[in-house]
Amino acid sequence: MIKRTLKQSITNALKGIAFAFRTQRNMRIHGIAGILALCLATYLRLSLTNMAIIVLTVIVVMVCEMVNTAIECATDIQASDNFNPLVKVAKDVAAGAVWLSAMGAILIGILIFIPAILQRLK
Image: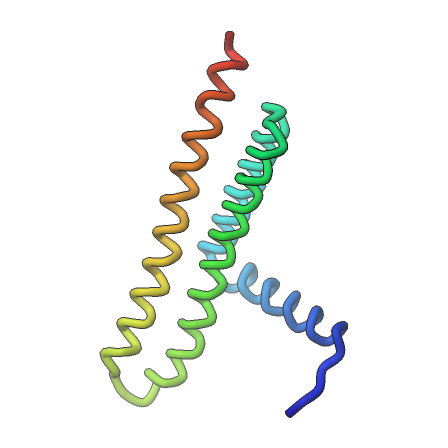
């Protein structure tokens, strides 16, 4: 077993995040949406609890996108030789996780931002 230092582990994790942003359009879209959500939350001066919910929601969507990317990369190796229906299932399930997390994020955004915006307009 290869023994890694904490610094090496963090470096590898950051390389993985950078790879996802560099190669995955949807990761960049989720990143921009997350930044906009956090900016809006700051502008609206949301409570600490609501801010934490927004931060956690953004992170969950981005983590799902990264897991999806990892599954796609790993299964592409398997699928390069021949078609395997389980590879398609793995990719579809991972994509479904991203979609579900994104839809949940939209719902959370509606539940938190709409009342805050309406309160600000009063």
